[in-house]
Image (cartoon, rainbow, N blue to C red; front, side):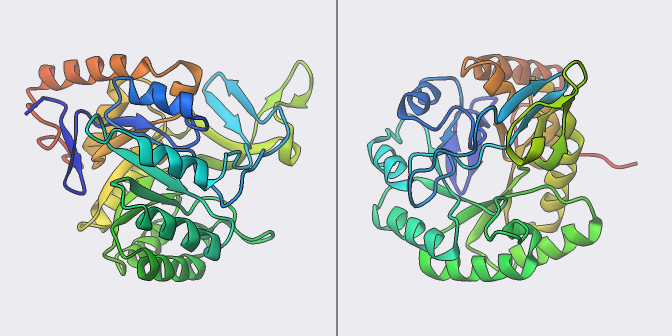
Amino acid sequence: MSLLSASLLGIKFANPLLNASGVHCRYTDELDALAASAAGSLITKSCTLLEREGNPEPRYAATALGSINSMGLPNQGYAYYLDYARRHNYATKPLFFSVAGLSLEDNLTMMAAVRDAYIPAIVELNLSCPNVPGKPQIAYDFEAMDRMLAAVSAEYALPFGVKMPPYFDIAHFDAAAAILNKYPLVAFVTCINSIGNALVIDIENESVVIKPKDGFGGIGGDYVLPTALANVNAFYRRCPDKQVIGCGGVRSGEQVFMHLLAGASLVQVGTALHEDSPRIFARLNRELSAIMERKGYRSIEALRGKLKTL
């Protein structure tokens, strides 16, 4: 077994790294570049039933400590990604398929289509996007999340995962985990999507830096690392029958190691990938290997979830 070998849902990965959904994965050429990279797997853009152009530009901005964005789910529609998933070479590396329907009915339609395609793509249901105007995103509306997971579990009838927003209160960790644990087909939890509704200000222009929502957007990168690690560890502790995928603040092997130590089985890379290219995965693997060798770890499983408390 390789030093960096990882597993999720009984599937083997050459290493624990992949892109975060939304980054370098809207078009097939971007997905092909990820497939050809040193990433252990890849995930498609979160898709909707129909193609979406997303929010007006500029909708992403790099900052000193990461990024801010309000993309608006630009994607080519689920049929585009399902066609790619049918053609993907699963012998090379696993593929995740990200679903972010604008309604429960849309999610059920898309997940049924993936199921009926009889392909080994792993579905990640994005619960951290707004669903109904004037309502919070699904994962912040616990009753709606419960209804969504009940309906999707019944319709899809296969193991799937959920992409979660960050939580900031112990009571919310407890409440969300209690709902997730009701559904054995929810096999993994991805933590976290960006921290929403932040505001970055350009002092020279005395202006916001992105156009949508009067400049309000989700932040990623260095800003979110401690919050991401807390969410990974919180769900690792509370959902012992599920696996966790870490996402947030990863730009070196050191942060990958932190996510694994907190309990992640795989680790997604977002802002750092956006600011670099898929070649980042080779560097992250080298740096992670060096840390593991220095510390005497011979496998990811030997360190996963071994975070010490004081």
